[in-house]
Length: 283
Image (tube, rainbow, N blue to C red; front, side, top):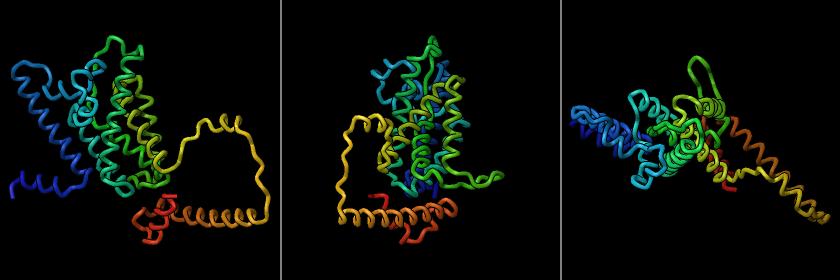
Protein backbone atom coordinates (compact mmCIF):
# COMPACT_ATOMS: atom_id res chain seq x y z
CA UNK A 1 0.00 0.00 0.00
CA UNK A 2 1.42 3.37 -1.02
CA UNK A 3 1.82 6.32 1.33
CA UNK A 4 -0.99 8.21 -0.41
CA UNK A 5 -3.34 5.25 -0.13
CA UNK A 6 -2.51 4.90 3.55
CA UNK A 7 -3.35 8.59 4.12
CA UNK A 8 -6.66 8.17 2.27
CA UNK A 9 -7.53 5.13 4.34
CA UNK A 10 -6.74 6.89 7.59
CA UNK A 11 -8.77 9.91 6.54
CA UNK A 12 -11.82 7.85 5.54
CA UNK A 13 -11.75 5.68 8.67
CA UNK A 14 -10.93 8.52 11.08
CA UNK A 15 -13.39 10.45 13.21
CA UNK A 16 -14.17 14.13 12.67
CA UNK A 17 -11.24 15.24 14.85
CA UNK A 18 -8.78 13.26 12.73
CA UNK A 19 -10.40 14.53 9.53
CA UNK A 20 -10.02 18.15 10.67
CA UNK A 21 -6.38 17.48 11.54
CA UNK A 22 -5.73 15.98 8.08
CA UNK A 23 -7.43 18.93 6.38
CA UNK A 24 -5.43 21.48 8.37
CA UNK A 25 -2.17 19.69 7.63
CA UNK A 26 -3.03 19.42 3.93
CA UNK A 27 -3.87 23.13 3.68
CA UNK A 28 -0.70 24.03 5.59
CA UNK A 29 1.50 22.03 3.20
CA UNK A 30 -0.26 23.48 0.16
CA UNK A 31 0.11 27.03 1.48
CA UNK A 32 3.79 26.39 2.24
CA UNK A 33 4.45 25.17 -1.30
CA UNK A 34 2.57 28.14 -2.74
CA UNK A 35 4.66 30.55 -0.67
CA UNK A 36 7.86 28.93 -2.01
CA UNK A 37 6.75 29.37 -5.61
CA UNK A 38 5.60 32.92 -4.90
CA UNK A 39 8.98 33.71 -3.40
CA UNK A 40 10.74 32.48 -6.55
CA UNK A 41 8.82 35.13 -8.49
CA UNK A 42 9.51 37.82 -5.88
CA UNK A 43 5.89 37.88 -4.75
CA UNK A 44 5.21 38.51 -1.11
CA UNK A 45 3.05 35.95 0.66
CA UNK A 46 1.08 33.05 -0.66
CA UNK A 47 -1.95 33.24 -2.91
CA UNK A 48 -3.77 30.95 -0.50
CA UNK A 49 -3.02 33.21 2.46
CA UNK A 50 -4.03 36.28 0.47
CA UNK A 51 -7.40 34.90 -0.53
CA UNK A 52 -8.37 32.78 2.46
CA UNK A 53 -7.05 34.66 5.51
CA UNK A 54 -9.31 37.15 7.31
CA UNK A 55 -8.31 40.80 6.88
CA UNK A 56 -8.83 43.35 9.63
CA UNK A 57 -10.69 45.62 7.19
CA UNK A 58 -14.36 44.60 7.28
CA UNK A 59 -14.81 45.78 3.67
CA UNK A 60 -12.76 42.77 2.55
CA UNK A 61 -15.69 40.56 3.53
CA UNK A 62 -17.55 41.89 0.49
CA UNK A 63 -14.83 40.58 -1.86
CA UNK A 64 -14.05 37.34 -0.03
CA UNK A 65 -16.88 36.52 2.40
CA UNK A 66 -15.62 32.94 2.79
CA UNK A 67 -12.60 34.23 4.71
CA UNK A 68 -14.71 34.49 7.90
CA UNK A 69 -14.51 30.66 7.99
CA UNK A 70 -11.56 29.72 5.78
CA UNK A 71 -9.02 31.50 8.00
CA UNK A 72 -9.62 28.76 10.55
CA UNK A 73 -7.81 26.25 8.34
CA UNK A 74 -4.67 28.37 7.77
CA UNK A 75 -1.65 28.70 10.04
CA UNK A 76 1.28 31.09 10.25
CA UNK A 77 3.99 28.50 10.89
CA UNK A 78 4.90 25.02 12.08
CA UNK A 79 4.73 25.83 15.82
CA UNK A 80 1.38 27.52 15.31
CA UNK A 81 -0.24 24.53 13.63
CA UNK A 82 1.50 22.03 15.94
CA UNK A 83 0.05 23.45 19.15
CA UNK A 84 -3.40 23.99 17.62
CA UNK A 85 -3.64 20.42 16.33
CA UNK A 86 -2.35 18.89 19.58
CA UNK A 87 -5.03 20.81 21.46
CA UNK A 88 -7.66 19.83 18.89
CA UNK A 89 -6.73 16.14 19.17
CA UNK A 90 -6.98 15.83 22.95
CA UNK A 91 -9.81 18.28 23.55
CA UNK A 92 -11.75 17.10 20.51
CA UNK A 93 -11.68 13.43 21.52
CA UNK A 94 -12.83 14.33 25.02
CA UNK A 95 -15.66 16.35 23.45
CA UNK A 96 -16.73 13.29 21.43
CA UNK A 97 -17.28 11.28 24.61
CA UNK A 98 -20.30 13.48 25.35
CA UNK A 99 -21.32 15.00 22.00
CA UNK A 100 -21.65 13.83 18.41
CA UNK A 101 -19.18 14.30 15.56
CA UNK A 102 -21.63 16.61 13.81
CA UNK A 103 -21.80 18.79 16.91
CA UNK A 104 -18.01 18.99 17.10
CA UNK A 105 -17.82 20.14 13.48
CA UNK A 106 -20.51 22.74 14.20
CA UNK A 107 -18.57 24.01 17.23
CA UNK A 108 -15.40 24.25 15.16
CA UNK A 109 -17.00 26.15 12.27
CA UNK A 110 -19.35 28.40 14.23
CA UNK A 111 -16.65 29.09 16.82
CA UNK A 112 -14.36 30.10 13.96
CA UNK A 113 -17.10 32.39 12.63
CA UNK A 114 -17.69 34.11 15.97
CA UNK A 115 -13.96 34.45 16.51
CA UNK A 116 -13.63 36.14 13.14
CA UNK A 117 -16.50 38.51 13.88
CA UNK A 118 -15.00 39.60 17.21
CA UNK A 119 -11.59 40.01 15.56
CA UNK A 120 -12.92 42.32 12.84
CA UNK A 121 -14.99 44.35 15.32
CA UNK A 122 -12.06 44.80 17.70
CA UNK A 123 -9.65 45.86 14.95
CA UNK A 124 -12.05 48.54 13.75
CA UNK A 125 -13.25 49.80 17.13
CA UNK A 126 -10.34 50.07 19.58
CA UNK A 127 -7.88 52.98 19.13
CA UNK A 128 -4.99 50.61 19.89
CA UNK A 129 -5.26 49.13 16.38
CA UNK A 130 -5.52 52.38 14.42
CA UNK A 131 -2.97 52.55 11.62
CA UNK A 132 -2.14 48.86 11.86
CA UNK A 133 -2.69 46.30 9.14
CA UNK A 134 -3.13 42.65 10.08
CA UNK A 135 -4.81 39.45 9.05
CA UNK A 136 -6.07 36.47 11.00
CA UNK A 137 -5.24 32.77 10.53
CA UNK A 138 -5.44 29.74 12.78
CA UNK A 139 -7.79 27.13 14.19
CA UNK A 140 -7.61 28.52 17.72
CA UNK A 141 -11.08 30.11 17.71
CA UNK A 142 -12.69 26.82 16.72
CA UNK A 143 -10.59 24.89 19.25
CA UNK A 144 -11.54 27.42 21.94
CA UNK A 145 -15.23 26.88 21.21
CA UNK A 146 -14.78 23.12 21.62
CA UNK A 147 -12.67 23.42 24.76
CA UNK A 148 -14.85 25.94 26.60
CA UNK A 149 -17.94 24.06 25.46
CA UNK A 150 -16.86 20.76 27.00
CA UNK A 151 -15.45 22.54 30.08
CA UNK A 152 -18.86 24.16 30.59
CA UNK A 153 -20.60 20.79 30.25
CA UNK A 154 -18.31 18.83 32.63
CA UNK A 155 -16.42 21.49 34.63
CA UNK A 156 -15.36 19.09 37.40
CA UNK A 157 -13.92 16.44 35.06
CA UNK A 158 -10.31 15.84 36.06
CA UNK A 159 -7.34 15.39 33.76
CA UNK A 160 -4.04 13.96 34.95
CA UNK A 161 -1.14 16.18 33.95
CA UNK A 162 2.43 14.98 34.31
CA UNK A 163 4.34 16.58 37.21
CA UNK A 164 1.16 18.37 38.36
CA UNK A 165 -1.42 15.68 39.03
CA UNK A 166 -5.18 15.83 38.60
CA UNK A 167 -6.57 19.18 37.47
CA UNK A 168 -10.23 20.02 36.97
CA UNK A 169 -11.27 21.00 33.48
CA UNK A 170 -12.69 24.34 34.53
CA UNK A 171 -9.34 25.29 36.07
CA UNK A 172 -7.63 24.73 32.72
CA UNK A 173 -10.39 26.67 30.97
CA UNK A 174 -9.91 29.59 33.38
CA UNK A 175 -6.18 29.67 32.61
CA UNK A 176 -6.95 29.43 28.88
CA UNK A 177 -9.33 32.42 29.04
CA UNK A 178 -7.06 34.36 31.38
CA UNK A 179 -4.11 34.17 28.99
CA UNK A 180 -6.29 35.47 26.16
CA UNK A 181 -7.59 38.36 28.27
CA UNK A 182 -4.02 39.34 29.15
CA UNK A 183 -3.09 39.04 25.46
CA UNK A 184 -5.69 41.58 24.32
CA UNK A 185 -3.01 44.27 24.32
CA UNK A 186 -0.14 42.00 23.28
CA UNK A 187 1.52 41.26 19.96
CA UNK A 188 -1.20 38.76 19.05
CA UNK A 189 -4.13 40.84 20.29
CA UNK A 190 -6.23 40.04 17.24
CA UNK A 191 -5.78 36.33 17.84
CA UNK A 192 -6.77 36.73 21.50
CA UNK A 193 -10.00 38.47 20.48
CA UNK A 194 -10.73 35.61 18.07
CA UNK A 195 -10.08 33.01 20.78
CA UNK A 196 -12.48 34.78 23.13
CA UNK A 197 -15.12 34.98 20.41
CA UNK A 198 -14.98 31.23 19.89
CA UNK A 199 -14.91 30.59 23.63
CA UNK A 200 -17.96 32.79 24.17
CA UNK A 201 -19.93 30.81 21.60
CA UNK A 202 -18.94 27.48 23.18
CA UNK A 203 -19.94 28.66 26.64
CA UNK A 204 -23.29 30.20 25.69
CA UNK A 205 -24.32 27.34 23.41
CA UNK A 206 -23.65 24.59 25.94
CA UNK A 207 -25.38 26.51 28.74
CA UNK A 208 -28.45 26.98 26.53
CA UNK A 209 -28.49 23.49 24.99
CA UNK A 210 -28.11 21.79 28.39
CA UNK A 211 -31.09 23.72 29.77
CA UNK A 212 -28.84 25.73 32.05
CA UNK A 213 -30.13 29.14 31.08
CA UNK A 214 -28.06 32.15 32.08
CA UNK A 215 -30.37 34.30 34.21
CA UNK A 216 -28.52 37.58 34.52
CA UNK A 217 -31.56 39.79 35.02
CA UNK A 218 -33.85 37.53 37.06
CA UNK A 219 -33.42 39.64 40.17
CA UNK A 220 -34.65 42.74 38.38
CA UNK A 221 -37.48 41.04 36.49
CA UNK A 222 -38.74 39.28 39.61
CA UNK A 223 -39.03 42.63 41.33
CA UNK A 224 -41.80 43.63 38.91
CA UNK A 225 -43.64 40.31 39.06
CA UNK A 226 -46.76 39.98 41.16
CA UNK A 227 -46.25 37.46 43.92
CA UNK A 228 -49.13 35.03 44.30
CA UNK A 229 -49.75 32.99 47.40
CA UNK A 230 -49.98 29.26 46.67
CA UNK A 231 -53.10 27.34 47.67
CA UNK A 232 -52.51 25.31 50.78
CA UNK A 233 -54.25 21.96 50.58
CA UNK A 234 -53.39 18.61 52.04
CA UNK A 235 -53.24 17.00 48.59
CA UNK A 236 -50.78 19.49 47.15
CA UNK A 237 -48.65 19.39 50.25
CA UNK A 238 -48.24 15.60 49.97
CA UNK A 239 -47.51 15.87 46.27
CA UNK A 240 -44.90 18.54 46.84
CA UNK A 241 -43.31 16.51 49.63
CA UNK A 242 -43.17 13.40 47.41
CA UNK A 243 -41.71 15.43 44.50
CA UNK A 244 -39.10 17.00 46.81
CA UNK A 245 -38.11 13.55 48.13
CA UNK A 246 -37.71 12.16 44.59
CA UNK A 247 -35.74 15.23 43.54
CA UNK A 248 -33.36 14.86 46.49
CA UNK A 249 -32.82 11.17 45.75
CA UNK A 250 -32.16 11.90 42.07
CA UNK A 251 -29.76 14.70 42.96
CA UNK A 252 -27.86 12.43 45.34
CA UNK A 253 -27.51 9.81 42.63
CA UNK A 254 -26.40 12.45 40.10
CA UNK A 255 -23.79 13.79 42.53
CA UNK A 256 -22.48 10.26 43.12
CA UNK A 257 -22.18 9.59 39.38
CA UNK A 258 -20.50 12.97 38.69
CA UNK A 259 -18.05 12.32 41.51
CA UNK A 260 -17.24 8.94 39.95
CA UNK A 261 -16.69 10.62 36.55
CA UNK A 262 -14.37 13.24 38.05
CA UNK A 263 -12.26 10.55 39.76
CA UNK A 264 -12.22 7.75 37.21
CA UNK A 265 -13.66 9.09 33.94
CA UNK A 266 -16.89 8.60 32.05
CA UNK A 267 -15.93 5.15 30.70
CA UNK A 268 -16.02 3.62 34.20
CA UNK A 269 -19.77 4.16 34.54
CA UNK A 270 -22.07 1.16 34.33
CA UNK A 271 -24.68 1.04 31.55
CA UNK A 272 -27.45 1.78 34.08
CA UNK A 273 -25.57 4.81 35.40
CA UNK A 274 -25.04 6.14 31.87
CA UNK A 275 -28.72 5.63 31.07
CA UNK A 276 -29.80 7.37 34.29
CA UNK A 277 -27.48 10.34 33.60
CA UNK A 278 -28.77 10.60 30.03
CA UNK A 279 -32.42 10.63 31.16
CA UNK A 280 -31.76 13.27 33.80
CA UNK A 281 -30.02 15.46 31.21
CA UNK A 282 -33.14 15.43 29.03
CA UNK A 283 -35.42 16.71 31.81
